[in-house]
Image (cartoon, rainbow, N blue to C red):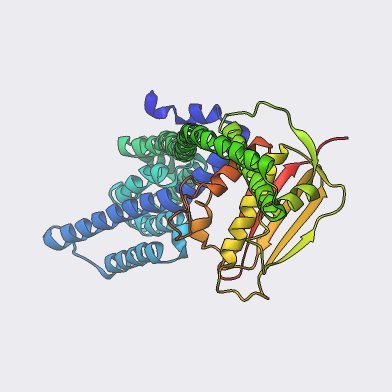
Length: 454
């Protein structure tokens, strides 16, 4: 039966998940299901009592409603209210025992006074037939049935002469209503308990699978975001290849013109300017060549071992003009090497230094502009941090800084490609770039790179 297959499915789970289900079943049955079942049973019992009292009041053949009847009804109403609004609701099946003893007291008093007739205990028998549903426990059901048999035997002994006890108790126990109520109670306890366990097992499995589906959906959304970002990078790569090749043609022509001018020049002052032009053209050529190379999925040449301090010094020379008036503090140990593509890593340092000078802005006084560059080597990796005391970055912007074409700068010629390219270069080095900032205080970029093995 499909509806009763929940437990079978739970048994196929791991031991930990089965234990989770047992805790789930106990909490749901004790704090949700059993209190509701008790409410329904008590409500039906109370309505049956009111109908019985109404019958006594309207029937001329009956003696009418007595004080005992009203007291019995009042106590039953108090028990119902206590179960609804007090801690008694969470102490299942205590309410079942309380109601049973209350009904048994008055029912067996009427049973004794009527000379062991069945009519006074019919209501009690009907309540007992529902005990299995209310408690969902075979143990509690059997306990209540045994207590009732003891009370029945005691009341029968008090209601009839000793010589008639055997025949009276036999007549009562063999009555079809009594037998039906006694049999229904344990049977209903077993089947309703199994039904509830399977139903809650299906609910547990459904929640568990919903959680798994939610995790899968989250993973798919994250993967979709990463794929979208990769598509941006691919689009940037294709566009960059074409642009960079177009840049190289006029750059080569300009370099040839400067070389020719140097070859025929006899003016020492002009010679210095031409040397500077040659140096910067070489720098442009290296940058463009590196960008062309790193627009490919993987660089063609092998990684080299380079001194970090030398690479940073080279980057500082390239940025000498932009760093005027800025206090640059270096804390790089001597002879710290890293496995890298030197020109590419130098370009990363240049880009980060230019970003730092841009963050310092014009609002900072000349004496307060500061950039700290530190390198720490430990546990097989090198961490290089570049920190400025500029205007900082808002938390919502940090996550998007490495997206292509995203920039916090209001400058119209800023394409927002620098950090995206830097991140790509660091990834090609099997490294990681982390950006931290305190708005209005500072910004720190940390590069984590693997160190070469000796």
